[in-house]
Amino acid sequence: MKHVRKVVFSLAAAVLLLSFSIRAQAQYRQPIVAPNDTLANVRYDYKWEFYGGVAYSHFNAGPSLVRGANLGGFEARADRFFTPRWAAVGDVRGYYGTSGTQPNPYGIRGPFVSETMFLGGAEYRGPSNQHASISLHALVGGAYGSFERGLYDQNNQPVAPINVGFFNNQVAFGSAFGGTIDLNRSPRLAFRISPDATLTDFGSAGLKGQFAISVGLVYRMGHDHAKRK
Image (cartoon, rainbow, N blue to C red; front, side, top):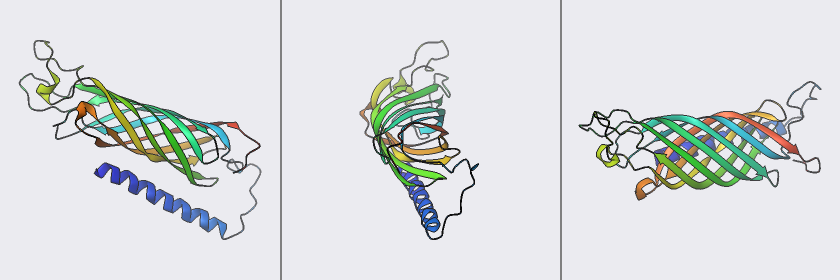
C-alpha cells in the first residue's frame, strides 16, 4: 500500500501549501487587479468541468509477478457541480504497454497488456483561489484487463496466461482514490495534475493497490450567475 501512502502524502502537502497561501493573502489588502489580468475573473460556480489528459499507471498483470508494468494512456472525465464544492464525476481511463512475465519456455518476453477503467463517484473541492484549486475524489466502478493478446509461443500457438504468471482477460472491480491540483490559466481553462491510488480485484486475488497519475487540461462551462463562490 506504499503507493496509496504516496498519493495521500502528496495531496496533504499540496493542501497545506495552498492553505498557507490563501491565509497569507487574507492578511493584507489585495492590490487592485488590472483589467487585463487573465485570472481576475476566476470563479468556481461553473456547473460543468471537462478534463482530458495523458496518464501513467504502475500495474501488475498477474498475481505472482515480482515487477509491475509501467503503462501509458489517457484519462477523460466530466464533473457536474451541484454546489461550488460538491460534484458528481464520470471517469474513463485506459493504460497500455508491455509487461514482464515469469520465466517460461515459450519465448514470450514483454507481451502487450492493457487496463480500461469505467468509474463514477463524488468530488469535493477544497482550498481554492484565483490561481489554483485542490479537490479530492472517490471513484468506483469496473476495470477490464486485457492480458492474453501477446501470449503466443514460437509456433504461434496460444499460451495459457497462468503459464507466464498472468491473469485471464476479465472484468473486475476497480476504483480510484485521490485528488486534483488545478492551476488556472484563465477563468475557464486550467492545467491539472491528478494523482490516484487505484484498487482492482483481478482474478479475485484481493484488492491490489497501484499508483496512477495524469496531467492535462480542464475546461469549465455552464456558468451560473446566480451562484457566488
